[in-house]
Length: 407
Ligand code: TYD
Image (cartoon, rainbow, N blue to C red; front, side, top):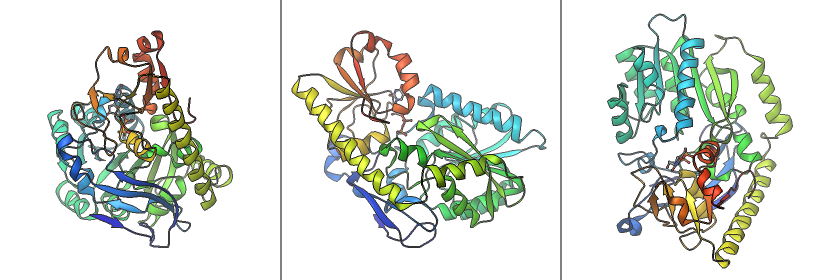
């Protein structure tokens, strides 16, 4: 089922379409050859609401197409992300919860429990909310109390009845299609002086770096401060602090509270100035320019891969990310241009990439002997990967990056 719309999913005003990447499969929908004939596609088009300033997908896929018992993303696969979530947990414990008696922490989209296990280990009351059964099960095995469900105002009410109100609610890189219900749920669950932390890849970085691969089904909205403020303000919450994070090519961690319960820090005004006066994220023209930049990147990448193919070079992909689905399908790059993608996630191995059907091969220590060039789809983990793969470079291998430029 495809829930098509032209009204803003947040404020119901008219949304202007600014770009379309054409027909797109589910980004994490890695599949077996037997299932090619029943693959699901939708139009990946984006719009910008000039009223509430939210950049959003115009056609949303049904959540059950994306989150299920075969969900292919495990937070713990990246060493850097595990370290990031450990630091996040320690930051909460040391700076935001120290004076609380018997604090209670909830994470929405808790995946395999990478963040919450630091609370579990310390005996701090916690609860993970996770829609995909397979990753929720791993979290439970790690000692993290986890409820397998989608988060909305109804589930929030149930949690409140069963566990009481919450001191801190954390969400990182989780993408909800029902943001208004999420905002209602958070407002309902959060204690009077509680803190809600919302962390996501930052719209400003995506636009600036033409990182259009961050746009896919799960990312129904791409957030900036203006939109986050507008979305949660409707439920009496306000942003009182923001912090930039390095993850996913540049993210923002927004700290919210019930209106007036924490004093507003200067970081909020500084980011607002950046958005409105420097990056022009509040103007629809910015997104039309972005669309043109995406087209240019598409042409450059395809030209490069065709040139390498003509020269008889062996080109493979590194990391079968959800992001790669947008790149591969928008650029129509199939197995002729990239023969396979190496990936460490067992559930993806032996399957094919969504839409373009490039084989996903298990990552092995000597993968690099099979390639002259490798396209780095997990560019957001470049530091970790370059450290790990010095053999490839030493042997004359070359990396292809497509953000912020084709290099
Ligand atoms: P990430 O950029 O976090 O994912 P997504 O775009 O899917 O949100 O990358 C996760 C994928 O990258 C996952 O399939 C595992 C793979 N990967 C490797 O194969 N090797 C690595 O060294 C890293 C860091 C990730």
